[in-house]
Image (cartoon, rainbow, N blue to C red; front, side, top):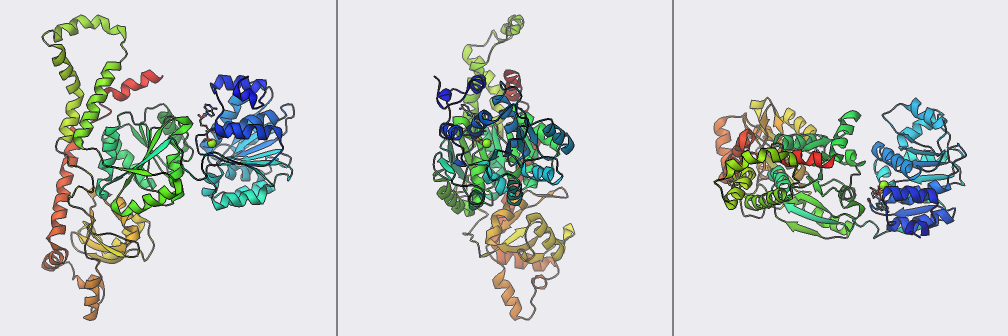
Length: 613
Ligand code: ADP
Ligand code: MG
């Protein structure tokens, strides 16, 4: 008797399970399935993503449904369209040997009348997103007044997405006698609240620690200067030639721009965010599943539905605002028992957030340094050697071999190896030869000269000014909008001809540095640096003189004024910073034209595709 049979599952499910290739039940399946089969009970199950929750409720649900009765008997609510479709697919696979059992997906962005028609035709199981379900109910297109089962899948994510009211309203439309099964990776207060309100004496199942990160994911962080974030991302990708990753950014705009830069630099990358049409998103996801994309750059919301096995790395290009979200991000890797790595790129001022996350996930981060150019060359070289070694040979090549042998006949085996490997390796070597280390501990110039804390004002230098058609109000508006900050969050804005100064609270510093550095304005790259001065000593002195107002204190952009004041106040150091900043940009331009290690030129991705199809 196999393990699934021991759990009490019947023949038609066992056959389907065999087809799926599941050999043993996962822990949550082992715990939930017998309970749900034997009792008519409510249930709360907490288990990390990737632990097999869909089958944990799907198998017993299918066994309990009366396939001869065409009425809707079960409603499964799920947070996103992608998950909704995925669950529907899974349920269909599980129930493929059961005649007459129909499952319908109900989600936004597709024809509601078509979905309603499918439900009318007889669907015992509806899998729905809360928004569309509510819509269907409001329009009287569906009847869930007599269902026996309601399943809240990924409950924490649904509530995270603001579906609390929808869920309450949908649940009030279902009978009290039904059984409710709630599945979630974590148990935040809102989930507990739903549980209390709509469930009675639920059986509780917990797999692993509550709120803990999955044991199959290891966590690493890398400290870099804010301006090096993108370069660090590239090195991490280069140091992991087989990377298959989701890269998380905080905003749609960052998501788009990081993806664009990666593509321009020759990586197999794409963006996934809410501004894409459904068709575009589907296309991106298809390419990602098919491994044509190695780096999927995504916002948190857009990535909610991603369930792709074998993701090797989750990269937190920027940390999420809410620490809870970190769990959802890292859960995209380490699925189905595979190992995965969650990487965080941080600036010094964000290190304390790492410690807060450690407390929540109850796992330690390992601090690592971004590999040096030489290390990356070594990694790439070995990777290439192994790739050559393991390449499958297509015997079509036999016809060409005599001519090829002829070409190589004067070379020894060693010489030949050297040259073959150099074909690929030279590109990396010439690119990385001149590159500095990115580690922010490396004692090199730093754009963060002092510890920055929330509550402290921080003053910045920015390389745009009146020459770029800004006066102080316009610059303030631009900063507020670009940084998504409130009215009073940007202050002491002082515009000079070719540059300006402004302040924010220290809590926004990481954001200011991340968003503005590298931001392109009319084809010019913005550069922001933190000044040692917070602008307060200066303005109070001015206030004493009765002149007030920052803008006036710096005069109307007179060059001499700016030269002497600017330099003496901010010292030679900042200016030299600025100079080395532009030095740093020079190779970037070169790179674009030639030296970049262009993945798309390399044979890696092209070889990869046929092997998978
Ligand atoms: P969760 O909902 O907990 O995030 P899923 O139900 O989506 O996890 O399952 C994650 C992956 O594991 C899916 O690809 C699924 O097919 C696979 N899976 C589920 N149960 C088993 C099992 N018993 N054996 C092998 N693979 C499984
Ligand atoms: Mg799931």
